[in-house]
Image (tube, rainbow, N blue to C red; front, side):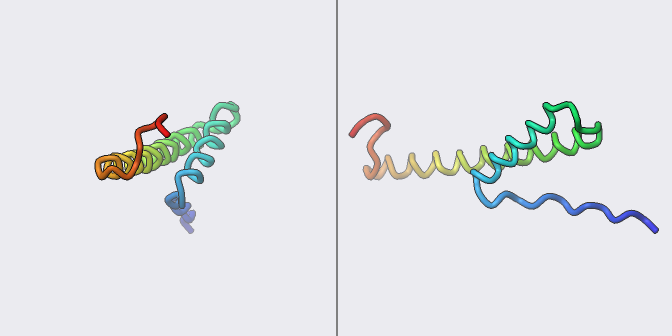
Length: 79
């Protein structure tokens, strides 16, 4: 009977959750205790998490630019 494949990891629910998972994954990889297959899977998952985080940061940056253009947000450092 063939071995059941693991389901792909789900998308993070938030930027914070993705960042926490990414930090934990990096810690595991840096420990030197992961097998080679685990390192490869970890690298792939890390790349997905990094892409998610960058996407969220880009979306927030765009929202800030839109609000700034509408005069609703002051530039950073001004009160």
